[in-house]
Image 1: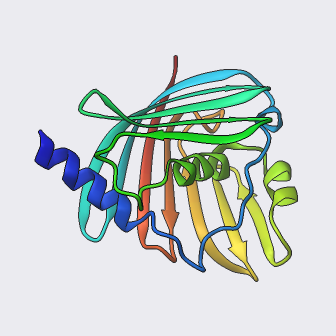
Image 2: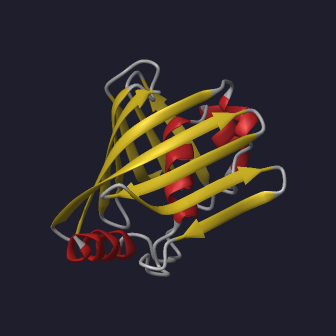
Length: 176
């Protein structure tokens, strides 16, 4: 089991290190989501030819967001965002390069309303939407491409492809 956890964490670290290609999104206020919701998720990360999965639970209300990432039933990362800022609690097994904050940011890029995201991004960045997709662009070039199978968008399968970092998240969500 320990080898599997280390393989998952290494894969997450490969797509989680700092980079100048990072989408410069500050945290969007929980209230901007527009509703109270708890999701259970199965997240599959594909990067560097490897694929690994983990579970997550995300609770959103107008005051806060709580995210717990679990591997093999163990909590590896817990992230809490409220008016006081972001707090992250990590298992000692989690490499420094793995960022719960980045997981939260990707979820916000996927699920928060387009208007809230566009207002939080600096000049040169834009968010465009189709009926079942969203693109985050820098100077007209797609950095993130997101596709949705359900309506509302957090229901069912979401696929997030980060074209500059070369990773893909497949997120299967159910309301708890």
